[in-house]
Length: 296
Image (cartoon, rainbow, N blue to C red):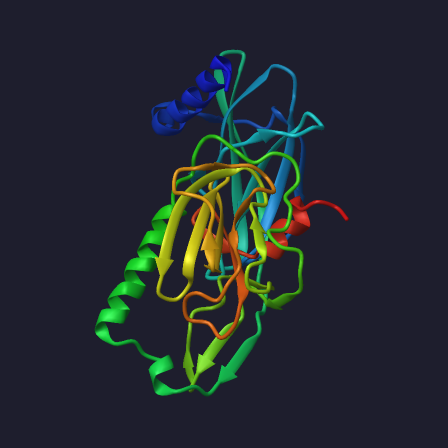
């Protein structure tokens, strides 16, 4: 990495930490083009916001619903931010606020996205009682696993690692979709936080883009689990691996094999559970791939 890029990353981090000290006036003179895909977007979904600046305007930062989000330059020369909302989000307007400097003065401009509701399927199953509730020691481990995964997906770094289009971790059929809510013996469980992809035992699993491994952990429910930070608050998660081929803290390239599919954890057969977290919220991997995936 060049010294210039390192300096840029440090400067962005500085702005994110100390920007409240600057007073911004309202203005609508700097945003030129503004497009969001999709628009509107849905709870559990992702939207790619592209925008252009008018001459003489220096962009300082972009906020989504009060949280600073990194931006990157597209091949077209326009800038882009990636935003999303989780399954618990309420429909309504979502503010994208731009802060910039023009002629030595600080201004801000607000544009709005529309978040709509989306109905997700339900599945009712009858299982043995031990599959519904956990003994205290097991419950303690499950909760510890959940905390570790949340922590591994929590940081919104000012640098974006991913470049270009995303590739599938494994090209196969979707067995279970995002948002599916299961009821065991009438008792509701949390909605499915990712998608399940068909993968025979030992199938190579690839990183869909460049990033840094933030978690390698043997979890009670998800088995051998890997989390990759792609920068800008975007993370991908891989569960039930039979073998892990990366270490925590390791850099991975797009298409690099990070592990082999399997049936570790509490599942009935081998497959890959693939999850995506954006700005601290679980979102649908299919939506990410529709927007940023390689075109067939």
